[in-house]
Length: 369
Image 1 (cartoon, one colour):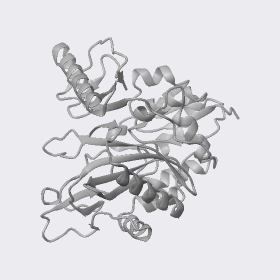
Image 2 (cartoon, rainbow, N blue to C red):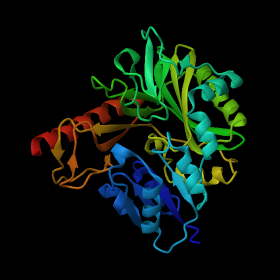
Image 3 (cartoon, one colour):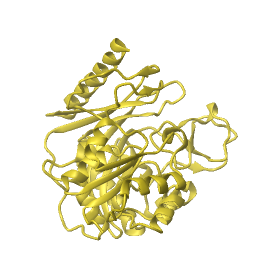
């Protein structure tokens, strides 16, 4: 077994691979995009064809793992986004590999709306009213897909047809805030909070747009949200990096969901000279006897979506871009194009800079399309 080689499988494996490299690991990556910077980071890479449309499957993962391992025996597997609605795949992987992360049964509980609501009630955490039955009066209700991720699956219930994989949640006011935390199956360590925003379209009003840290929350609510995460981590065996999504209104908050895997905010919480991936591996092994890394200034990240069907032009991508597609790649309208980052003194400045950079990338693609 190669103790430093590790399998990374996610919708996009670049952020995990970069952090793994910084932590002294050698990433073998399986993802949906095979972006140029991902291939630079990965010792080996396999593409899940049509992953954005079809998601992960056991057959595709087995074939991809055979390709990237090529006779090596990595220490295990780290799973990112792409498994939220498929806990059975985590169980499938665990039959042959050590999975560094939350187990399949816990994922299934967290992504089962009634079970998650019951868990929140057990832990004394407020959450929006949730039901599997489509309300007769859909005013003020959202329709969501079980195990959905990224916000694209969320919309007003009145505008969505009934579906077998849908559930319904009372819409509540608040600012979207996410907590990134580590857990060792017994307790949690909150690494920080980020404010999030949507990049809406008419059919996807809650599509994930980006995040900035720090979130600018007052200390009493930070303490209360941290305590709620502590109670959850003492009740259900979360492992490694996780995120908790809240809606914050005044001095109150409601918990929307727990994502038991490294989140889209990994880049903005990566400590200077450190590695969240290495901390993830330590927490999965049961070690959580360290303080949250200190993070300077403010940092923002945003996802750039293609505004039209395009063939990616040859670009000199600046350092503040990531998840860079290959020149000549065909990107459909609404599909992810790349990610942009910005570091600044304050969260307001970081958000403005990342918005400017997003607009710059879109202008490049329009000018050279």
